[in-house]
Amino acid sequence: MKAVLPVSQREITRILNKPLSLEDREEVIGFTIDGETSKDLDDAIWVEPNQAKANISVHISDVSAFIEPGSNLERNALSQVETRYLATKNDPMFPHELSEDRLSLLEAQRRLTITVRITIDALGDIEKVSLHRTHLVNLKKFSYTSADATLKDASSPFFCELRYCEAWAQKLAWKRKDVGAIGLSRLGGISLDEEGRILSTPLYHSQQIIQEFMILANMAVASLAEQQQVPLLYRNHLASDIAPKSKELIQTLNVLGLPELVRQKLQSWLKPATYSPAVMGHFALALPAYTHFTSPIRRVADYVNHHIVKAVLIDKTESPYTIDELQDIASHINEKRSQIKERREEHFREKRLNQTIKVLQEKSQIKTLSDQEFSQILKDSIKVSQLDKLVPEALWRIEEKTIKLVDLYYLIFGEYNKYENKQLLTSKILDYLSENPVHATQIVQMAGSINQTTVEYIEKKTASGKFAFWSILEGETTATPGIAANKQTAKHQGNMLLIESIFDQSLIPPQLINEDYLQDMVETEVREESKAIKEVVSEPEIEELELSGVPEAAKLNPVGYLHEIGQRLKRKKPQYVYHQVGLQWQCCCRIEWLGENIVETLAINSSKKEAKNMASLKAISLLEEDMIE
Image (cartoon, rainbow, N blue to C red):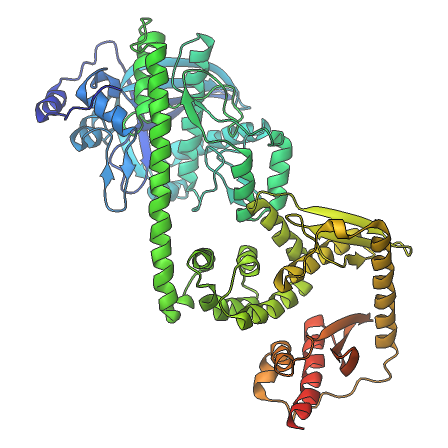
């Protein structure tokens, strides 16, 4: 790259005073839709009806009419690569005086433009593409908010125009979906951007219109250039060797549904998008050729492509850049963007960690966190070894059933400074998962995805025809399998046991389980399960629950209180056995000591949770007497 020299005010003033040459330029109309605070308006749109077809025009600021190849302005733009948007200001690729005035498609101001005109049929297929030198007067500057409001108000000016644009944008979106595109789509309720990255905030309806039209224009220019073998800065996006085919990929992502799982899968399946003079296709958009052309004020790749397209495809002359120069520019942009991304991610990581430390120091703030904020604080607290401070809030969210699965993942695999916090969470999380066994499987899948490993299973069948599952994560499994008459239920139970073994650090290598041992374990489990059911069923009568001697703290949280008593008495943790009786659940609570049941209580209720609480309260009553003695 050539050395960067400062841009003089004289050079800026010369451009500002340069008269607009409208010779051989078609006059066009359109309107812009951008963010609330946007001042550098690159593009405008317009749609004209054509029977069952539509002529879509994307008018783009003709930056190349003012900025010359080899100028200091171009060198600065190539050095910076793109406009950077900060919290309180922006650092423009071109000086503010140009990017927000002479180059920007301001409302009611005449501006030089390049128009990409595309005719599409009723199915959204492209029939014709043409490029034109034009000049535009922007009829209206919409923000996303004002455009969305106009779409809902039939009395507003531009209502019909915007609704017409919305209808054709929807056709384009359907067309992309039909060919297997995942970019700018929703999968499993999660929104993805152009390159398959998860969007943290939902898109406005009008924002989706603009994005569909910009993809259409960029695709049309890339197709024209490829057909005529014109080297551009193509935008290539490739999948990794382990990525499934697009339809299988979409099906998998729809099944996953959880943002963290989807994010991890996409990171392992998709490579970062890059620029190159060679055409390699765009995986996320399912396109054979794609480029960036619609943002020449904000991205240097678009600016370079404007010079090439005007010279070769419109003026029929030679490209102002050689292949070697284009390759150097592409490599520079790719490297610079990678550095910017790393710095941005590092900045946000530091900012989040500082915010996490601040929140953890102020306990009152923890209760005010939204679900998304709590998940982020929970994730970051692991990095600063302060997970314990979030335990009370995590317990409350588990009790209220507002906890997210990704939160449970962090709580299960995180490290604690205080053993009692881990023990308390173990009891609560296992109780929660016992009522939602499918969540155990989702958490184990999440662990495999985040750690970029495959969750494997050992599957066997018992002599009685039941299914037995051992779950294997990172080369370790459980001593006993999950057993059930239903295959999926057995799998969930196997994952429940895996999570329990992670808590108590009792995982073993799967090599320790041989075929004889497998069958032995399965049959033993079946016998014990059968024995437990018979014992529960044969219980003569369930005693009434006597609460007079039970402390108030125990009534509020019977299972947790019983667990604490067991720790104080150095007894094994309670064992719970359930049996369905009609429409109700029977729960037997057993506490062993030296191989014998020292406490065994029974309760029945319409829900498993309440039956467990009642059985625990009975056990507490007996153990309280034991402690008094």
